[in-house]
Image 1 (cartoon, helix red, strand yellow):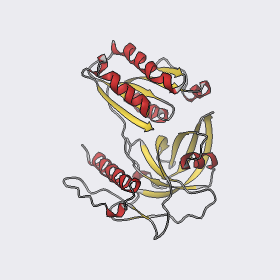
Image 2: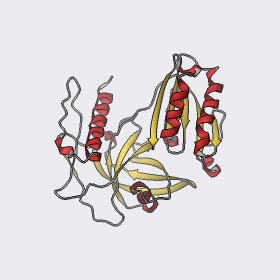
Image 3: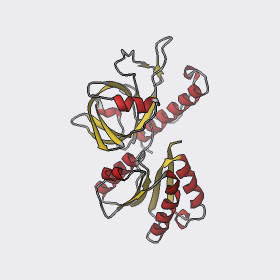
Amino acid sequence: MDDRMAELIQLSLDEHAQEFLTDHGASASALQLEWHGLPTADLRYRFQVVQIIAVTDITPHMRRVRLAVPVMTALADDGLHVRLLLPPPNATVQWPQLNAQGRLQWAAGQTPLPQRIYTIRQYDTRAQWVDIDIVRHDHDAPGAQWLAQAKPGDHVGLLGPSGGHLPQAPHLLLVADMTALPAALRIAQQQGTRGSCWQLLALATHAGDTAYIPAAAHVQWHVGDIASQPAAVQHWLRAQAASATADTQLWLAGGKALVQATKTALKTHPLATGIEHKLAVYWQ
């Protein structure tokens, strides 16, 4: 493990521990973690206030937000995610500070801003921008409200890197619903630069969202309700099993029900024998 990956793991575990304490009514300031045998994390640019420079609807349910990021060195080259702090629209925000342990320090009595983890779809280090692709939802959750009203000129807090990394294998099998498709496409793009093979099963509940990925021989869409997705995934995996080799890796991400059903199916699936697989829950 190189120093950059060790730092990414260290910061991610610290974040998860803080989130666990906050969700259970405890103060994150009480958290005391000691790391041994790991490099000291570079915290100088881990938290930045960044500006939205463009908002684009790519499909009826996928919106792209482009952020101007002054210091790109804070983002790992193979990091998948960042955490955004989402202020209310038109609000005057008192942004937190980052303390010596890399934790957000809010002013006394201040209610912390809602935070959401999003996937880095693509970025340009020289031009200093990052694209975040986010599925649009019609409900009143903080992330959905922020996305519906986001516009150029708005500011958000960016905390990164925030967990996840690009898998590396000569042959990847990718399965993703709409929430995970930005990550799957980022992985596929990286595979292409390495000259490696990949196959993608993309899951959507609306036909209009298939415009998110151009038609290609290595991309297959399943359009149907969420309940139909586990069976479609298992059927697709059975078709891939014949060509899978020892250096094949399965990466699947989506809703909790899909991940659990796939995990159960893999216990007796031909791909489970000698094939590394990573399953990630992106939503409950």
